[in-house]
Image (cartoon, rainbow, N blue to C red; front, side):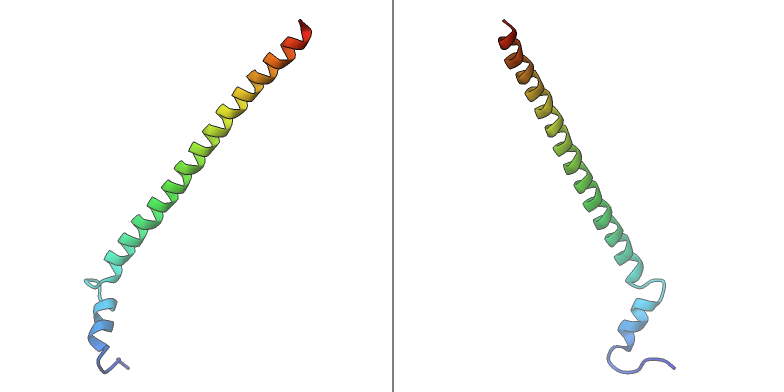
Length: 70
């Protein structure tokens, strides 16, 4: 039983292999992959910032403790 009416041509366009589903899936794949890469890069940049701040604070703590020994 096929679909009839105004939306039948659109349904056939979506369903066949030359339709819009495959290009839409490719575009969606690129969008999701780009978002995942953006999120991962932001996370690693934040992690790098935290690591550098930690080394700065450790060095400052060592300097403060060395003043007490003198």
